[in-house]
Structures are given as structure tokens and as C-alpha cells.
Length: 354
Ligand code: IPM
Ligand code: MN
Image (cartoon, rainbow, N blue to C red; front, side, top):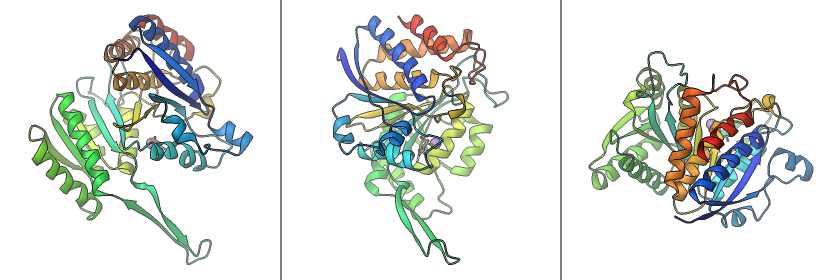
């Protein structure tokens, strides 16, 4: 384990800077105990910077970020900026530019956290979604014909490559093996309608699984049925592998099932490169600057980051502190209902881990 990590910090828009500040507070505190030094470099990309300079992402952004060990991102999205500009120009540009081909989103209900699913508890809600993060409908293929006329045509094409599918599926099998729970990987797709794209996924899934992962049980579920099972029988899932857009949708459902956007974290991962971790909720403009937003999701993004960097003991320590705060301190995980301010929640965790 290295004793020093260079981290690029992009606080971003809205409540992003508030929650990132708490994540950094916790990482510094835990780093002190575990003799890990963090060298944080703050980068002010986002809506405000775009409004002031007209630049969403500088030309040298990708080579510059490749010099770091990891990236911690707050949130992207500004009420004064037309939807799509920052999302595509910044968030997706970083995911594509750094080839973050995995979006890893754990769905775990911690003890003491309220879930809207009646009669289900922490032992039932504990699975991980491996979302493909660089292809599908997000690849941006498409266009318009006769725009603005009654004959207008809009085409948005889902791109699925054997290479892109296979590297994602392999990551999911490896992850499932390492996780060592139910050893079950579920492919989520829509083979009954998407007879080209889902077919490629299904063939790749079974080929790779049969050849290289005979110890992992393979299951299949349609994406619509998956939404049903996530609510009715979430305990059936161990690891899910899914294409980009379906993964986007089911992980918002997952976030609600595990207690809301206040706790849901994810990693944009390039296993061979520089990965980027983020709370999966948005910039929440209506809560900005009020000190009411929950920083636990950003803190949990930090946990995923240090785990991947190799500081597992530190990751476990912070995660235990988060669980302790959920079980014993916070009244709710919702913004403004925690019984603590944003920075007080950060203080609780930081104190516990120092
Ligand atoms: C997410 C977000 C993004 C996505 C948006 C902001 C582009 O919803 O991280 O899930 O669709 O991937
Ligand atoms: Mn989303």
C-alpha cells in the first residue's frame, strides 16, 4: 500500500462542494490514523466556471487527470445552464475520456436506515450493480432530419461492441467471485425486444461465464421484471451486470431501496486507469448552501475510492463509522431531517475514524 495518494477533487455544482468538503474531512482524519497521506488538488470545473469562462472542460483535462491516482467528484448540474451541456460536456466527457467502462453501484441497506420496502431489512438488501458506462445510448450516436418540421426524424442509436460488452461482463464475473456471497451474476437486459443488442450481451455473458467462470451461477432477468424484483424480492440479487441506460434507471431505484440519495455512492471505474468516485445524487440546487444536505453518499464514495486504491483497512474503518452513525445518530438520511447539519455529520464520522 502506498502511503501517499494524489487525488483530483472536482466539487462541481450545487451541494457538490458541501458534501465533498465533508468527504475530505473524513479522509484526512482516517488518513491520520492509518498513516496515509492525501494530496488533494481542487479543480473548479462546473456550472459556475462555465458561466464565467464559457469553458465546460479544458482541452488538456484528460491528460491532466491521468496524472492523479483517483478523482473525487461532487455533483454536476446547474439551474442556469441548459440540461445536457454540463452532463455531456463534463461528466460524460470524463467517463468517456478516461474510459471509465464500469459504473459500480452497490445497493446496501445499513442497519437503522429506513427503506420504503416493507418487511425487508439489511439482510435482504445487499447487492451490487455493475453498469456498463461508455456505450449503449450514451455513446451519442444519432441525429436529426428535417428538424423543426412536421416531417422531423430523430434517431438515437444504442452502440454495443463485443469488446465493450465483454470487458464489462468479465469485470462483473471477477467482482462476483471476489465478493464471494451467493456467487450469482444476473444479466439484466431485454432479450425479448432488443434482439440485436441484448442478444450480444446474452451470448457474451454465457460464453465468458461457461468458459472462465464455471464457479459463478448465471441468471437472467428482463429489465422491467428487475424493477419488480428489486422491490418484491431484493434478496434474490447478488451482482447484476447491465448495459448503460438500463443501469442508469435501475440504480436510481436501487438508491431509494437502500435509503435514498443521501447514502448512495458509485464509482466510474477504469480498472487499468484513473477512476472517479461520486455520490450518485445530483447537485440538489434547492438545498445549496443551507447545510442540510447529507454528506454520507460523498463519504461512501470516498470509501469506494480508498478501497480501490488499496487502503482496505481504512475503507472498512470509515464504512463502520458510517454504519454506526446511521444506526445510532442520524434521525433520517433525508436532507434537512438528519437531526444534524451537513458539517456535523462530517464531524461525527471524522471523529469516529481518527
Ligand atoms: C448518473 C446520472 C448521469 C447518467 C447523468 C447526469 C448524465 O444520472 O450518474 O446516473 O445518466 O449517467
Ligand atoms: Mn442516473
